[in-house]
Length: 434
Image (cartoon, rainbow, N blue to C red; front, side, top):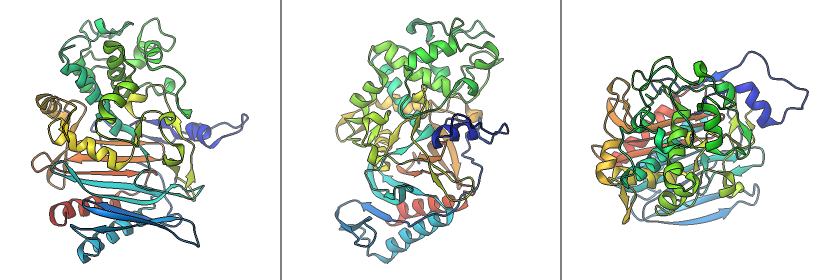
């Protein structure tokens, strides 16, 4: 999750004139150390909603309506058919809840025992241009992105390049020394938010489109005492590595940079070649330049008045939150994790490595290696949520029975009641319908 100063960033994304200035009173959204998914603001229901569904063992026909030009998808399921009254009622309920919540667009998916058993698309990817959400739409994932970054670094771990409690310093081309402690920062510290690296939002800017500053260059400026952005008291905590817990975007971005620092392979290229392509994640990428712009969902500002379509944005510390992917793509990633690191014959991680990633490291925080434990409706799930400008995401799985869900929204909501109800309905459907 990339926290932000909303008026300033919206000025960039909506295209303020050079003379305009943001209000000095900033409205912010914050991801807390307990990692709750909380947003503020007002969301207004907008436009025509379009719902499409994909389930296992299906044939799909796409038609175009003459009056609106929008496309809808009719699905015939040879397993749990959409004409089944229970399935029809379930999908109608989800549509009603999303309409009530005022979400511009959404995607959702369910996995069960390593397979995607249901996926669903709702509303608009771009309200301004009337572009509907389809199964090929890539949504900004915010902090759900971190699960991919953690997987990439643990793939390097699987090569024997380091141990989790090794210092990271020898692998970097610049100095990362905590100013409050002589203790070295380790790989485990980065993956558990215990490194003592703070997010200094004054020097974590958003830009329109893809970032233009290289990841390593930005982190060197931020973390190295000789860097242009270095500030000992604002970039680092008052406690040393391993002595506390504080959710850190920059720490996860550094984990992503370590992939390229150790292997000599660009982090984006590593993820594409070793995660996305083996898992057939065709609508996933860290950069807009890697995707079809027409198939990327725009974020939307729904804080005041009708929802407004925002421009695409990025930031230099991209491994902590800039991934864009469809729900169906990430369902395969979630299924791979649930299955112990492999899917359809493709080994992404060793089984024992996945077990480590889903083992509590900081029990008081429910924190494992990037992934964390969450109690939802009295049941234990593992996963991650995310929130960024105009984006809210959730991806979780129950380890005991292999049921997982993904829920992407391209708008922030003032009330999570309808989304909570929709999530509960999805889980009930996973248990009874699919």
